[in-house]
Length: 281
Image 1 (cartoon, rainbow, N blue to C red):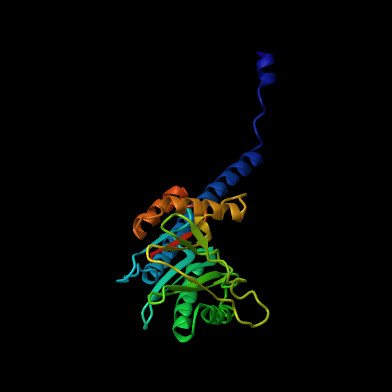
Image 2 (cartoon, rainbow, N blue to C red; image 1 turned 90 degrees about the vertical axis):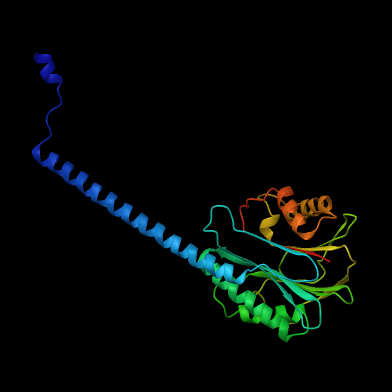
């Protein structure tokens, strides 16, 4: 009996017990406050997501062009709020033919979506007021310099003359479009590439190039999320793209878009945002 009494832990002094109870009570209160803050943050994120989705749905409508088949796909990065800074645009021109563009703003969320909307609208307006893709991107670059969050955004613009069957294009730091021929061989449109938007210290003309196409060719514009993978060289990424396109040769625009996403393993999205425009010429 004496040994048992000696082995028992002494009771905590009243002051220590009271201190422990107070600490537990304070911890409980802090946990409740944190739960409330987490719920408020969740609701705020949900509101931001709804606003950004509404913004993007209003701007990124599927084009309705009567001449060639045009397919567009837009997949936000997996795990994001379903909004991003990638964008596309396809527009008729007054003299026949049409223009197309894709672009990529750094970041995700409402801010990136808002910047995307401003750049997309500005490029569309610049294209109507200038003589071609290079001048339009030059104007866009000047505008982007005054827009917070637009630095280092990339874009590529193409003008398709359906009468002469010629594509005129210019790129501001963007990955090259691909002209896919019916036999499966792919041609990279990479002869008119310049730095991204709002990154040049001096004002100078951007490059522009032209390439002829034939009936049955297919033009593919895309953002980097379609092909870029961690620890993979960009040349290898582009090689995967052209190999996947070769296997899709002969498909119409809609089927090619879906088949390409599947072959690249991004039908449900990827680590980065994806915008894709496929045009049957």
